Image 1: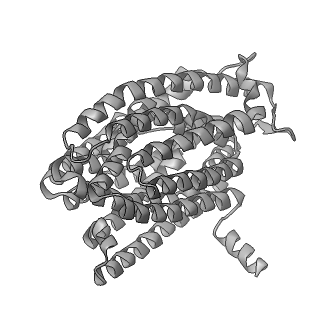
Image 2: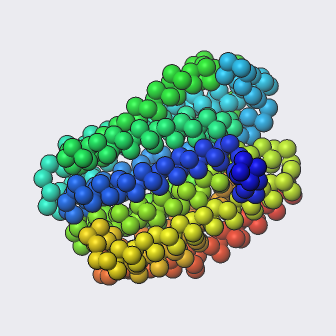
Length: 448
C-alpha cells in the first residue's frame, strides 16, 4: 500500500510542498464546508448577507497593496538560487545576493506599513457608509471596524510570508498555513456557535493576524535576522527590477476586484442581504475549489523561477504543463461534485439548499472556472520570468467585466453577474493569456 501511494503521489507530482499545500487547502475546503453549515445554522439569512459582504469589502485592500505580493515571490526566487539556509535556519551563501535580498525585504516592510494604515483609514468609513444604506441588521458597525483593523495588521505581514515562500521555503510556509487554517476555523466555529454573529468575522481575521505575527516574528526569527540591519553591498533597484512588473500587477489587482469581488456588494445593494448571502456562500465554494486546484501551481512558482535562472527551459515547460493540467483537473472534479451535491439538496428540498444559489449558477460557474484556472496558470508562468506583460491593457477585461456585472447584476441578479464573468473570460481573458504566454517566452529567451 505504501508503494502504491508513493507511486500515485509521483504521478500526480505531489512533493512535500504540494503535500502540505493540499493538506492546507483540503482543510480549507473541509473547514469551509463546516463553516458554511454553521453559518446557515447560526446566522439569519440577512446576517449571512452581511457576513459575505464584509469579506468582499475587505478585499478592497488591493487598492493599497498594488500587486506587490506576487512580485515578491518572483524577485526573491531569483536571488535565492545563490543562497540557502544553514542548520540554525540562518541565510548563508553569496554575499551580494544576500545584500540584494535584505534591501528588498526592508523596503517591503516600509511599503506595507504605509499600505496597512491607508487601508484602515479609507476602507473602514467607506464600508460603513455602504453597509448603512441597507441597514436591516443591527449591531454590524463595531464588528466591521474591528475586522478592518485586524485586516490591516494581516496586510502588513503579507510581504514577509511572500518573501519567505519565494526563498523556496514552500514546505515550511504551507505547513504554517495548514495550522493557521485549523486554528482560525476553530475560533470561527466557536464564535458562530456561541451566537456572537458578525463578530465572528473580526475574530477570524484577528486570530489569523496574531498567528502570522507569532510565526514570522518568533518561530522564524533566525531567517529574518539579517533584515534588521541595512545591507552592506548591492541593492535591488526598485525602479528597474520591481516597479515595471509591480505597476502592471497593481493595475491587475485593482481590476481583479471588479472581476472577483464586486458581485456580492452589487447583489447586496440591488437585491438585498438575503440574496447576497446566497450568492456569497455559493461563491465561497467556487473560490475554495479554485484555491485547492492552484495548490500545485503556487508551490511550484519558486521552482519555476529557479529553473529559469538556471536556463533549464525544457524542464520548466514540462513541469508547468503537468502542473497546469493537474490544477485544472482538480478544480473541474470539485465543481462536478458540488453540482451533484446541489442536485441532491434540491431533490430532497432541504433547508440548506435554499441558502445556496440554484444549479443554473453552478452550470455557468463550471466553464467560467475552468477558463479562469487556465488564465491563472498562464500568469504564474510568465511572472516566474520576472515579467508582467499586462499593463494598462489589463484594465480592459476588468472594466468590461465590472460594468457588465453592475449592469446585468442589478437587472438580472446573480445569473446576470456570472454570465458577465463567463463572457469576459471566454472572449477576452483566455485568448489574451494564450498570446502573452507565447510572447513572454519568446522575448525572454531571445534577450537572454
